[in-house]
Length: 370
Image (cartoon, rainbow, N blue to C red; front, side, top):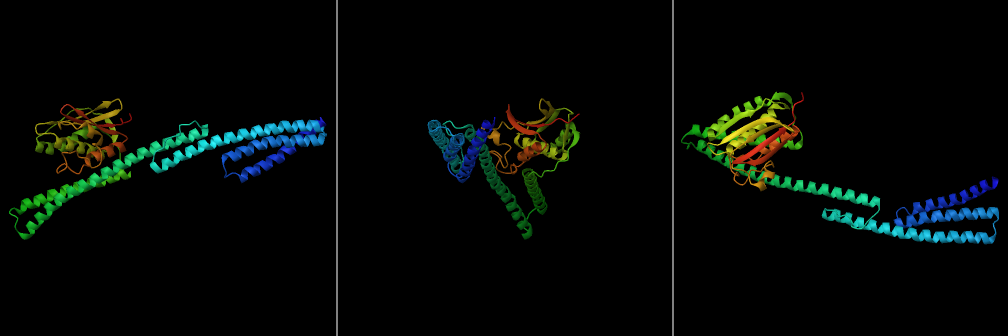
């Protein structure tokens, strides 16, 4: 028992000294290649065994023959271990360099292609994370390009829509100032109408800026869609009469919803105004509200003749007005963007699709809790 304890102590002492030296070597080589670290780790294992064996041999007075045999066996194990560590280290380093090159192209070109050669589980996980990050960044860049395009179009169209009424206001004010206006009352009435239109445009811009900034404050309350739609139809009736368009709202169920009444009235008003202006005289604009599988579905159908399929994804973009609606009174292309922003703030969604003779805008809202 005493001999066994001594052997264990001597072996532990030799291995411990070797381990400490290996730890110091790893610390010095921590910024070097992984190949050097793997070589040190392999060497520590073999040298620790050799040190423990030599310590025991010295303490137990083994014969020189036995000592040479043990040393030869350990030396062969050391050679094989070091060679294996070098091969493994070079393989891992090569895979790491390939991953580094792929990551460098990620930073330069903005996309990441994982190396095709197999790698360790850790490197494969890093590749997957980089690929996922690349996909997210690509989506972000695409959204940024779309927003930039929308912003430029909005600035161009707003500039056009502001320039036209301002030029008219200047001409009418100069005519009034010079006393050459044949009918001053008509001029004043026209000036007031233009000022009201500019005021509505500024109001839309302010509303849209609150939506984009995430500062749109909602005050939801429980109400019936029947009352909400009825008020919106009454408000849009004068415009419909002016354009010779029939308003129909006989498919509205009294479904309760939890919404901000003021903001949802704006949503319905924008949808109705958009539908009325694009429906030809003697056409019909129909409003419906009913329960659906995903919530309450509020729809406005018009007789615009339909929207080109390539334009459908852009209908709710800021500033988009289609190719035929770039002049007043079509507005600044903010109404439908405001609709989407308000609806999404209510945890709903707004969509559009073509129907025979026109298109149908749908707003899906969560059903009010019982």
